[in-house]
Image 1: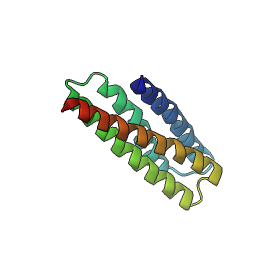
Image 2: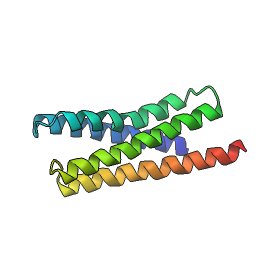
Image 3: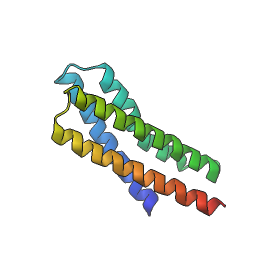
Image 4: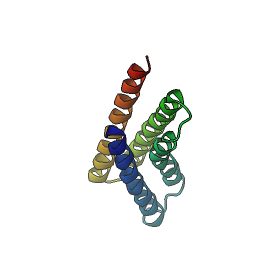
Length: 118
């Protein structure tokens, strides 16, 4: 059940990140940071999906770890975009909250899987 919630939440987040990237490129004429956040923000869900067909539990945990790193990187790019005035506070806080929720869910999933592994 939690895997499905994580999968769905990461997919919805990726859609928001794609729209953010489009906004940054079209409205703000910002191309470098928008590509960085597009790559990391969409990789979160892609890695979770990739993990569904992992070769082992260890491989699945590894995919979730990489997804967690991408989520952390995405949070970094969001902060940079906000601190350089590309994002309004309301949008920033909304995306940051969603990103932090994904991070918490990934950390929890990894811990649970590691306990079950031992």
